[in-house]
Image (cartoon, rainbow, N blue to C red):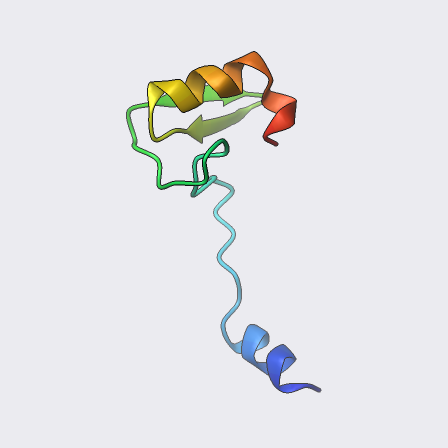
Length: 61
């Protein structure tokens, strides 16, 4: 077993199912700018990023 494998087993990745970054610009999102798409709530840092996502979600997923 390599050193990296043992590290990742010791510190497993948290899987909450919630996106932790704005899917458009990758910045930290705010809680009050959201958009639901295919049963997933996406959070955005600004209305501008939300509008871009709404126009073509498949470009950012």
